[in-house]
Length: 587
Image 1 (cartoon, rainbow, N blue to C red):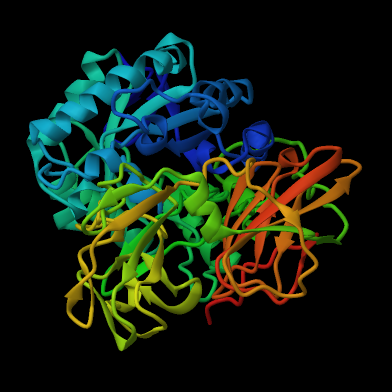
Image 2: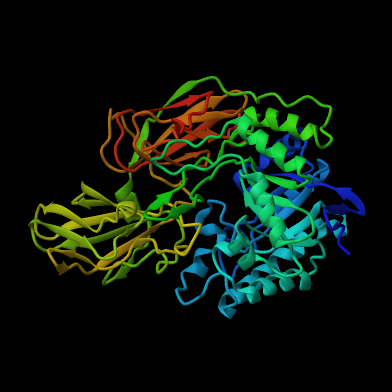
């Protein structure tokens, strides 16, 4: 029998009444050097449990390779730290997780197969899931509560009712966990909508809801779907995420705390989404695609109780007061903000042009027509496509099917335009300077759609390219995942400004590492690394204006800053500040 069981109205843990007061804390969005700190702060707010998704795409980047469980993906270590802090854990392994995460966590090598019916009982999909679970569950079983670990419950799929109604698929997952030794309570979660709850539920499995307001109505819908058992909100949305070009989303602490009080006063269990959002480091952010493609920013602050940089915000203190009315809260004082580095400036004294680097350091793949990223076996980053245009003169470059997701176009190295998926761009008017001019198209993957039917949408150039209706052939495709930028051939440069894609490098000294924030006024769009750690994407489109730099990324003494600027910069310096700037708030 599982340690966590259900009664007609609530939970029992080891036979004693228990209410889950949990918060979402995704290990893969937090530097592992800060896991213990964030878990301690979860306990001090009054949480008895933390919840985390598991990103399949990072844990199994190669279908034939081993499971990745190190560094920021060392889930067993994270679970051990949670146990040391006295916290229980809810695991949400998907296989689909949404989470505003690249591809919703589904691996690109899987979604590249257009014949597979994702999130269904298609044996090609369930076979891939089974192979993943065969690798994933053995190292996690020692951390289940049945074996003395902190994990008290495991979720089956994720908001499946918003996607499909294949009950056989849900049964397959349920049996997959059980047959591989998971004895703990299994549950589903769906938006508090009768149709979603019906389609995503599994008879005999606890159903939970996701909602951020209308507490009484949402709980009533959950009770109407499931006549008895615990009421639980598995995602109590206390903030929201941002897309590039939107205002920064916030929710008042008083409003969120009032709804939390309503939830707990109703006797329900809760998982606060998010307790601590963290950061979409590297190329891990997802995207939405309703009427248009909309990528998520680097920050996943989410206006959560614990800010992106791990300091208690207004919701932390408001929620602590609410929780104290309904459950024990530690007598220790609330944590103080962490120290920050004093503001300083870094000169970027060295540079390396990006297009020559891409051509010189990568092995091209030849093709008569451009190959997509999927066809090139690449899941994130950039691809540089190169060919020649036979005729000179004015004309139209047409990209059949558009681009995935943003293309910068160059003729003989000079920029001539940008095409964006979000604007449905396919055509660009250009002047070709001479016969057989070199055409370069640098395509950036801005993040895989994480929700809805467009998961797995291809990236790169999505079809043939023509100039005045004449097809362009003989393409060289250069793969640029940018997983390692240590070998970039920098040279000294004193240029005051720059108008071509280039890497830029500078160094700075730190006496004692502490959190800081990278600000880039005068820069346009690109990527940032410190000491080889990929902080993520910057873009003057906003709203986000600083990138969070976790203290463990820095080292005492010399530190290296590398920027890849894709467009132009009017400043050869970067600024570090002690204050984050996530942009103007939504009215």
